Image (cartoon, rainbow, N blue to C red; front, top):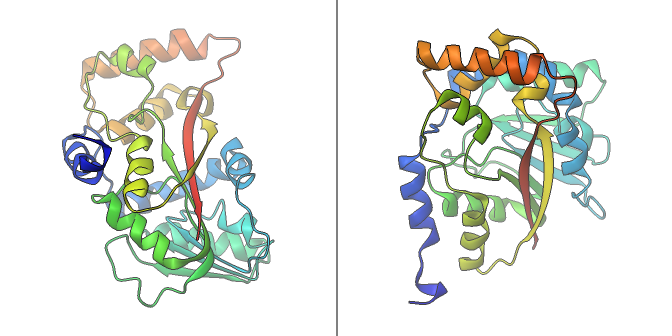
Length: 262
């Protein structure tokens, strides 16, 4: 067997199905939108991601999984046209209000998912999919991004295969099946004839951005699902000992930014 004999997309699909981390419903993201809007705009992630995005000689953008617009709003200042796509209407409603508050009028919102037809979605110079590649079939999703782009594609994908740090999992004493790591994406692109570049950026971890036991536990539960009473007590102990009482606790999550040119 050699490298070309390995079907990385088939391996991705199998591990995605088996993973402890399940995809969220539209309703779950609608409910999440207000709290996300309070935190995401000031994240270090935004500037680190955008430092990699080359907007030269470009006029239009498609932001897939745009959320409340933390990247769309910033790129709208640089580009003539921004198309912001998300399957959560709650996210898009907040994005539209954010744009109105900032007097930005060149953003068009599109309420679609990865699994809808994108025939009516405009092809754009730049396509981004920031932290939104939680898909059942990675090759299909990458093909969609590539087809919509005229010049460049940028996506980000969590490094490590877990939405929770090993420290938190160890504190819970929870064993998990990780989701496919970012290297699957690189290898699938290679099988598609696309040689992608890979850079790494950071976002704040849970231990940094949550300042109460309740918020911390809600955040962990959001990622992993139901938490037992025993696990909750273990998380409270972890929070009190490792976060609340720490003078300095810097916790970062690493993301792979995978990009290619047309």
